[in-house]
Image 1 (cartoon, rainbow, N blue to C red):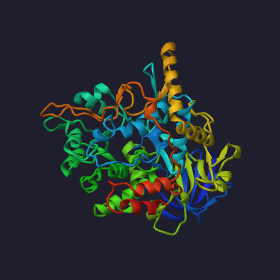
Image 2: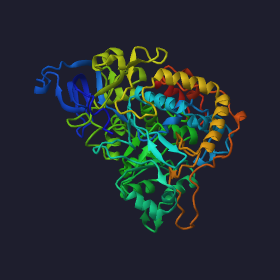
Image 3: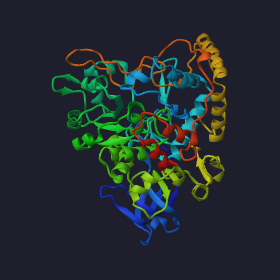
Image 4: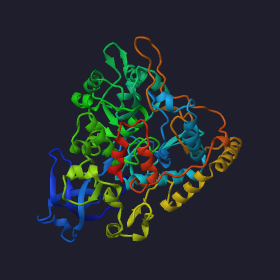
Length: 544
């Protein structure tokens, strides 16, 4: 399968303020991005003569500021159809809130997703909806959606938004977010896995108590010897100390920060001041809509508030780097994406306006301020006027519903789309998910019958590989024993198995695509009890 859009992107030129995110933090106040077949050819001041190959390509004035596309390093994408959970109490580690000990979690999260994930009609609708949601929030790269069959085979979803686990592009080495069960339980095998070429983005130390920190401490498999290499990217790392971060840095590890999710569940987030002091490279992830942001645009705002509460650890420029240049470096993609420089893929997000500080402008931007998103030089989302000028076949454009954002269009057609989704439109996906979420008990009955029929047929059937709902032969986190006690540390909650009771389900509503127009989300955010005082109201003001 060819790289994303390799054959689609023609020559185009975009004019505006250009925030390159190169190593010199170059900002071209009035410049032109010259793009040819998906790659950035030149970045020049608007007053400079165009390259020879672009003499017949008039620049399109975006009237905005262009940045590298946002790179998300942590999300559980299928769950992004669900609305924000009102977290009932303060938790101290991952095992407390996500399992059978919490009936709300089964009723609102695992139960609905188990039903939807096994429904052959709902699976493609989920994929289409959450990918569109990522685009609308400025994300050009995220974690993929895993599919798993009853025959034990697995494949990764390939779509419009880049998938860090399935790139088909040698310039974008594929990362992994799961490991075999045996590698999760044995430190030497885990270390051997880390010594393979791929980056591993794994949940590490989720919570704030000693049990959560023990997941990191268990990486020491012999005195002074750690199962950490530059390939380990630890997600969350909330209880780690300054000494812990120093050990990570010495061994080349990095981390993904999801501050809003951490605060909603645990009331605190990682000690990012200590991580920064140790020289840890940090990326961002919105985690999922159940206990996080709708996308990276929102998570940048949560990160700024968390940074300010910790003593203004990061500048806005450093926050933008986490979602662009630094994220690309963590994936070893920095020669291909993460900056707007010649030779890089033309993954671009444009926001309206050119006057304020360029980095603060992006952190402050609402979803309504995004005017254009390109991936590999193909316009995928933006203001309808711009999309029509940049899309040769305008019949491929789909208008975003006005109740989400007015005058916006999507281009979701892909020449090598995963057959799971094909030509499904966002409108079709939205309508289907709205209906089935409203009739979950009825759908559960149909899925239960389908499951029985599949057992009789004994044929391979694909389903969404939903985290910790059903065993798939792989883990999202190491489960290594502590060195001195040889006590194995549980990796997460105990998920109740067996037949799902239809009576435990209730009708749900589909999570909205955008934060600024979603009063249910904004009200719920402000009402969260675990957030620091005024955090919810200040974040609401930044999003609305």
